[in-house]
Figure 1 (tube, rainbow, N blue to C red):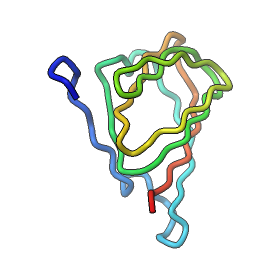
Figure 2: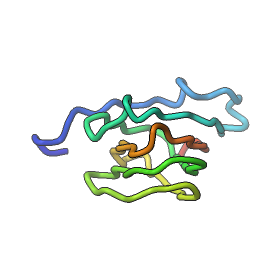
Figure 3: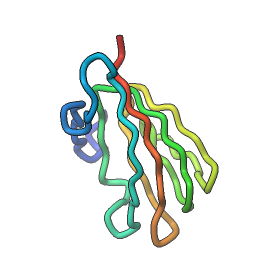
Figure 4: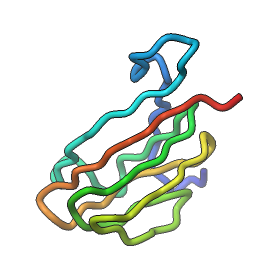
Length: 102
């Protein structure tokens, strides 16, 4: 991370995990509202993440690079990636599959 990048949040698995240690996966749907997300809200996690965009348009920020997204887009996020969203529509519905690295 460079000096001109905003601070990032570290997301921990225990915040999301609803399954036991024998099944270390979590699936959930989130509605991200555009007023809550811009390029200054960044996060890094300790787990892998697959995101599927069910509705919405905007930009997915991954390690300071911008990728356009729309309904049907899929992202595979590594635990070391620093990510965020810039949402162009009023909201984006996103399904996330989270799982721990071995």
